[in-house]
Amino acid sequence: MVRNITLTVSDLLNQAVSSYQVGHLDEAEGLCRAILRVDGNHVEALYLLGVVQSRLGRSKEALASYDRVLVIKPDYAQVLTNRGTTLWDLKRFEDALASHDKALAIKPDFAWALYNRGVTLRLQSIPANIAANSP
View 1 (cartoon, rainbow, N blue to C red):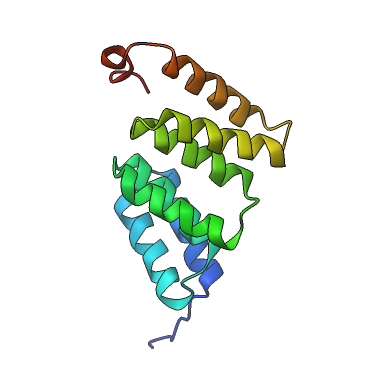
View 2: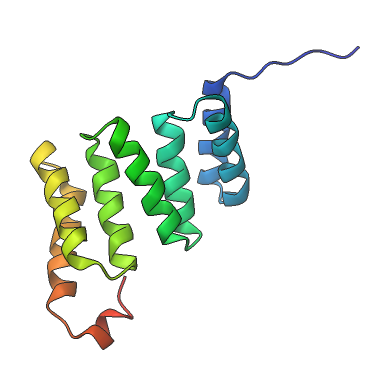
């Protein structure tokens, strides 16, 4: 007997998160893309896609995914601080600082954004040849 199983977008997102959590990044990326084929503005799928792309070392793609989220939901503090850390990877420290500052303006008690802001300030104050080997 063959059953017809229909997965919802929510089911796919849960699978994508689970895949990400166990380190199956390519699978998580594929699931996010499947969600986005159904709903191109699915905020959580775009956000997770950015996280996965960042983990895979594809910073420019991650930045584009985060920016797509922020067009839809400009007050998403977690995305703003993840965007800031991605901007570190691209050595765009002033832009990273601005992104962390926006996250803190939205959520002043957001410890991770505050920490990342401090790291960004530190990276700005050290010579470029040393900063190239930092986070």
